[in-house]
Amino acid sequence: MKWLVAKRVSQIRILEAARVLRAGGLVVMPTETVYGLAADAFDPCAVRRVFELKGRPSFDPLIVHVLDTAQLVTVARAVPASVRRLIDAFWPGPLTLVLPRRAALPAGVTAGLATVAVRMPRHPVARRLLRAFGGPIAAPSANRFGRISPTSAAAVQKEFGADTPPVLDAGPCFHGVESTIVRPSRGGFEILRPGAVTDAQIARATGRRVWLRGPRPPTAHPEAPGLLRQHYAPSRPVRILRPGWRSSPPRFRGRDALLAFREGIECFPGVVRVLSRRGSLREAARNLYRLLRQLDESGARRIFVEEVPAGGVGSAINDRLRRAAGVGDRPGG
Ligand code: AMP
Ligand code: MG
Image 1 (tube, rainbow, N blue to C red):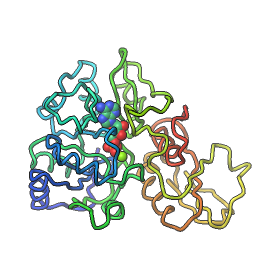
Image 2: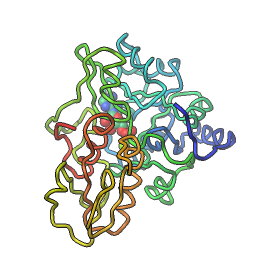
Image 3: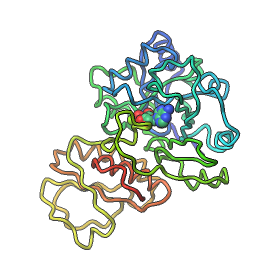
Image 4: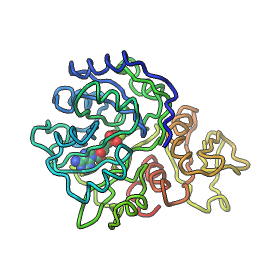
């Protein structure tokens, strides 16, 4: 895959950011999925600062980013043989693995769970930062809890305003939706959060059964709170438009906004944004959060979002759209 980094980040900026991390501070790092709020994974105070700045409940564990397998084994106690196939196939890349954790990792990172979620990012700037820092970096998405994930430095600034930590601005993120979170289970792989790597890709690479975790009753301690019903949400009410809606549309009003998958919307009274003119799911994923933010800031009263075709990265997009609408955990697509 060709790597397009829209903005060059100087080595001096990388070294400064590594110094901030070493001193227990936070920085914002680009990854190929979304921008992350980065802290030294082994510094419990720095990790606490991440939760405070995001307003993230302490039960919602962070993803730990590693440069290589040498860093991986400092946070994960065991790497099952089946998981090695996934690592070979998808790392570095947008796949997060849930593995047994090492006791030395601060409990706050994993929200007290016996497992740790780990990922080896592919983004060259994330990798340069990991190398300069020399250890695993805990980094959730760089947004306030429950809100839209940022895919640009400007979006991060809007989230945190004057509290924004130093940002390594490398331009827009390549995938635009979060990593796929996978847990080895019963001879196969359970997808806890659909993302940029698809279930079909995982099944093909491993020859094992892959399934999407179904709906479960809300608990006080969700195992994957990325699966909270309301998440990735604009401040305006979001309404889902199911396939076929164009033949019998709801009554739209002038201050409604519409996020459409592809071209061909006629007679919509308010602002319209199109995820992909040519109907590409990959392009739609890349544009999703940027356009959702634009509509949120447009002064619209309600935001209607059109479901995209199921399958491939469409599952991840529809998952985020449903959670933005507060109707997550619906099976399908
Ligand atoms: P974010 O980095 O904001 O995309 O959120 C990271 C997500 O990773 C969390 O919301 C959890 O759903 C998931 N996660 C982190 N650690 C674990 C774990 N040990 N087991 C299952 N899911 C996890
Ligand atoms: Mg997040």
